[in-house]
Amino acid sequence: MVRHCFVDKNGMKKGAWSKEEDDKLRAYVLRYGYWNWRLLPKYAGLARCGKSCRLRWMNYLKPGLKRVVISKEEEDLIMELHNQMGNKWSAIAAKLPGRTDNEVKNYWHSHIKKRNTQKTAATKVIVEQTSEIQTLKESEDLMLSPNTANGIACDTTSLDSVTVLQDTIWSETFLPFEPLELFGQLNFGELSSSDFSILSALNWVGDDSVNSSHSAEVLANFWAEPSASITTSSSNETNFSLPSGPLELSGELNFSELSSPDFSILSALNSVGDDSVNSSYSGAEVLANFWAEPSASISTSSSNETNFLLPVEKGGLFSPYISYYDDSMISMFL
DNA sequence: AATGTCCGCAACCGCCTGGAT
DNA sequence: GATCCAGGCGGTTGCGGACAT
Image (tube, rainbow, N blue to C red; front, side, top):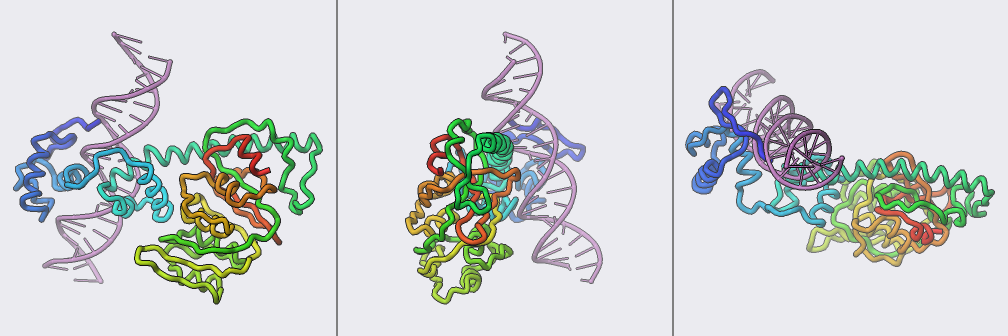
């Protein structure tokens, strides 16, 4: 697990730390603090370079560090923060008490990144399967719904034999061709770019150049809704009250992964809102249950990018990230 | 039981940033 | 403004345990 210990040409020890070295460093820092990492090892009686001492202290010896497995809640937070910040490991770690940047970075590379790679691979599988389904549909001369002006929605009967995919996949879900009533209040602490892309697309004036560095005020201007209001609660939450009238859907969204605020937006927009839904739910599941749209259907995209293609006039196409996919789920949509 | 392969994680490396001079 | 340097950061390495063959 640890690197072989050796002494370099300058007489500096490298590699795994011994218990004696840990004890010396801990005792020194707890007593005198770290006033100068370069000089510290000399005074602490360590044959290590300052950087090595700093790293050992920061990542292992510093009081308050959690030495337990990262929880599901922490993982969700890491994913959400990585969505917003990218590889800013120290900034992400700062939001996770007791975790270090190195720990978060290692966790990302060994767990989450790998999972995302599997997701991509699974996408290829579903694309191939969808192609087969499409071929089957065409061969059986199954007619599309009369409402599908762009010819995308499909008949249900040919999908009974779709192979169950237990892996994570990406999909696109067609929403019904009817306007959706807009109700409720959105509660989310921090807006991400995907939130803005959803909201902008829903308001016709789509422009996903707005990103998470913008404040909620931008949203009010963006929507140009005089009745929209913003309040900030005692916590960090921003409450954004949407106008009560229904809005027609239009536009196009591009976002890579749904986060919990996305779900709260979607659920609120559907008036049956329940923002207890979080990112551990699959996107398709949430849509199926919350939007309760019997005419929705599923097709797939070949890229990793999720596309929420809203129709030219009414209704739309939503492509959420979903964590599993089976016959029962398909039936919920069809 | 022996060997090979994979994986997690501690630690290293090199670059960047910002403060001091 | 230029230079130096400590601290900080992200990418990468490599050891050793776990698991597969």
